[in-house]
Amino acid sequence: MTHYRSKTIATWLAVLAGTLGLHRFYLHGLRDVAGWLHPVPTALGLLGIERVLTLGQDDRIAWVLLPLLGLSVSLAMLSAIVYGLTPDERWDARHNGGARGPQTGWGAVLGVVVGLLIGAGVLMSTIAYSGQRFFEWQFEAARDAGR
Image (cartoon, rainbow, N blue to C red; front, top):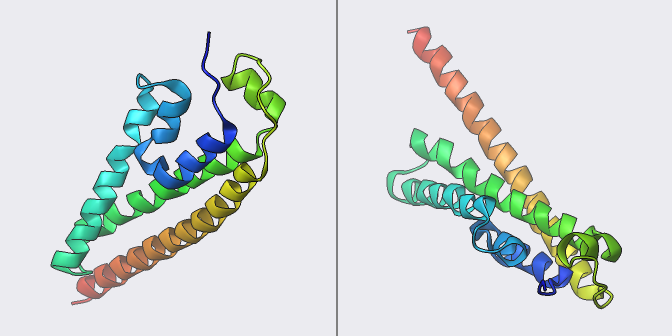
């Protein structure tokens, strides 16, 4: 017998702790390899934040590490959006062995809204930061080549 897995709980786990893979562990158990891979880019991104705070914005290692955190958060929010928007019948077929659970209410919808707000903001910030750093790097390389 499989345990009932709530779409609302999975959605909110992805929003609140998706960067640690808790939503994957809830759905697939502790043996889920993808769940164990979630904390790695999160930890590297947090290391990038720590490097920026201690070494400043010119630290090139932080330039590489920071976008990993943004992508990790964006991936978690995308998971929350997909979970929350999955029709109840498909959710039950995939995660509850076809057993019909209670109809999903507003909890999953609110999780999708929060996930969309956070995910969109973080993804746009990550793209802007990465683009800015790339063009600064290109400018510095061109300036150094002209010396």
